[in-house]
Image 1 (cartoon, rainbow, N blue to C red):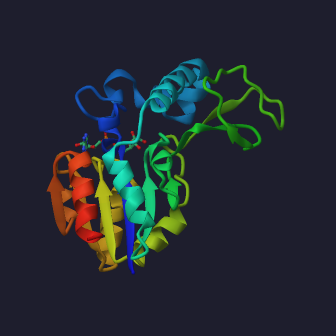
Image 2: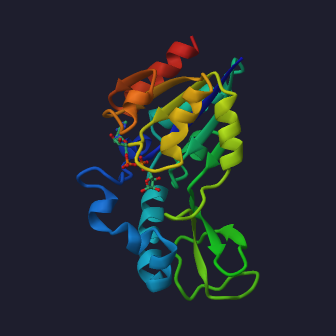
Length: 229
Ligand code: APR
């Protein structure tokens, strides 16, 4: 039984038609992070932030899981491996592909959160600054997304799993945002084998024991077939 920790980023959903962040046509080319992905930006203009995430929620709902998502779900179903799938993505394509041992460290477009009482509930298709919290009735509802400057979810569990893994695989991420960008070093320090599957060498590519570059829908199913003969 091999223990495998997998980290995914926007690149695994790119071939499902969901935009990445730092490509030439990426989301951060059109929006300033400080306006739509920080608590301060939300306080300044909640309408702008809700419009940004309403559009991304609609795009995610219209998208379908691709062969890379499906291959990871098949890997998890193989009794020879114990897989923890950690995603930076806020779309729901891993869950829709069938992955279950899944942690959304940056939250989810399909969750809503009350900025006053921390209550969480399933997000409606579109959210507005006038929406009321079902628990405390305050008009302070936000998407349940981890913004810059906020602590990602499940970090203790993820770091423990990284240290105890046989293999760490990073798929479709540029390695620009910590703590996820540091997982390869955390794993390496613990003597865990590391593999990068990405369209192009990421910022931390030189930290990986092995790296393969190409489209996720080709690289991921090929890799899964190799380890699940
Ligand atoms: N197949 C494989 N990799 C791909 C593909 C593809 N079809 N298309 C793009 N990529 C790779 C790119 O080469 C890039 O390295 O996916 C990576 C996407 O990088 P980013 O756009 O920076 O997205 P990500 O790494 O997920 O960003 C991390 O930053 O903005 C925050 O919270 C946001 O979770 C996000 C975090």
